[in-house]
Length: 164
Image 1: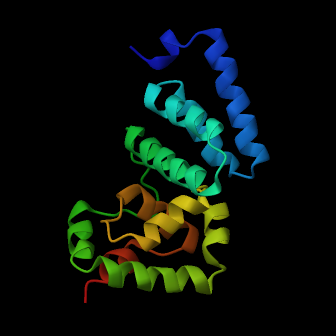
Image 2 (image 1 turned 180 degrees about the vertical axis):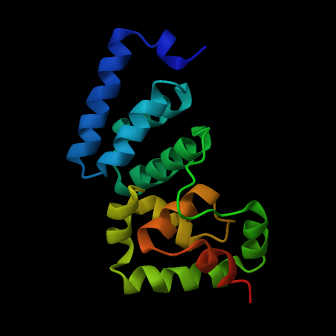
């Protein structure tokens, strides 16, 4: 059963009000739209959006936004494959030296305008991108795809540049 089937009118209105507050707070419109769409299907995303509304501290909100982006990515069932395709075995190779990979990619991001510009181009909130670049966790395929597309990197750039 999808969440929309059990989402009453009051909660739907609450969801749209939260999305308006997110827009007012300056979050990217593509992120907000994806969050609303996903929240209508998955209760956990709706709960995180309500949590974002309740918390006012910027650090707390940034963490919630990063968690929301992770849940949105997890809930997407279809991989959009256009010009760049990141194979799962490429991720294994990248994972061998994640810090070097992310530092090298960050240099490219900084050379092309920085994290804020990348957030605008990818629709990924700045806190999520900051978490991506500052963590030692293995990158998600969807996140790499969106970054690569924004930076106009080819699959060869992503898959081979950092294999050394």
